[in-house]
Image (cartoon, rainbow, N blue to C red; front, side, top):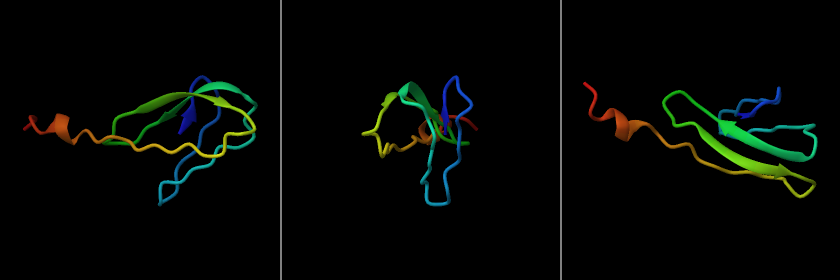
Length: 68
């Protein structure tokens, strides 16, 4: 997990939960990546009302079926 173009980053725990803290209010692009999964990006506006952002990474399984 990272905020694109910043030094803010973190890792998920074993259950997939993460925390990013002390982020100044503003607009960012959040990026999630994992080996074997497609990278996920979403623009988000951080404000006082942002508490949770849930997402699920897609697998590359379909793309790898044709590779032998």
